[in-house]
Amino acid sequence: MFRIKDHIRDIKDFPKKDIIYKDITPLLQNPKATRDALKEFLRHLGDQKIEKVVGIESRGFFFATLLAQELNAGFIPIRKPGKLPFKTFRESYSLEYGEDILEIHCDAIKKGEKVLIHDDVLATGGTAAAACKLVEKMGGEIVQCNFLMDLDFLKGREKLSAYKVVSLVTY
Ligand code: AMP
Image 1 (cartoon, rainbow, N blue to C red):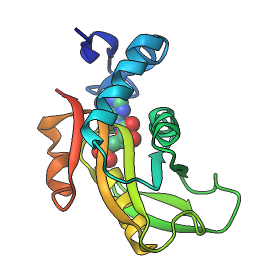
Image 2: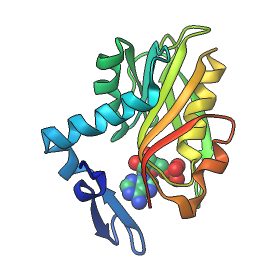
Image 3: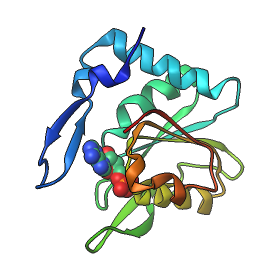
Image 4: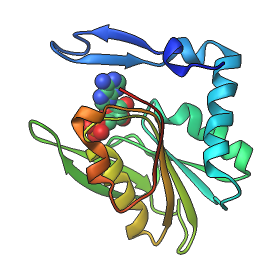
């Protein structure tokens, strides 16, 4: 049986003290585990129509591109400020200390398009909620937000209560 947790490595105190970083590189270096995780995401989506898969910088990009290919959808990157070369829309969101900004290309989503949001980890939910806002401001319709894992104690699902949230494993 495929157990995704067997392929996720905990790194204590990275990038700073008291954080347990969830490292997905063991999963990514294993083609069978990567394929199994991809199949799980597709199973959860069923036959729902998806036109754009939005991946959140940077670890959201890996499975978002794989999913986009499988779903015959376009892949859209959401990135930190100053990284995207064309005209962008931006959304700021608060972090524990201070705030951060996400950007998307202004021609990335068309009104009424069905969108899947993807990232590796759902923690407090601030990042994914900001990504959803950006997509909705452009007229996109969010079908689902999916994650490899969620950190339940950080209550990210509460920030995403307006959306269907799928996470392959919970910590
Ligand atoms: P949040 O906005 O708090 O839900 O944080 C989600 C973003 O931060 C995602 O893009 C994750 O890649 C990253 N992240 C948050 N916590 C962790 C963690 N413990 N391990 C790895 N990545 C994390």
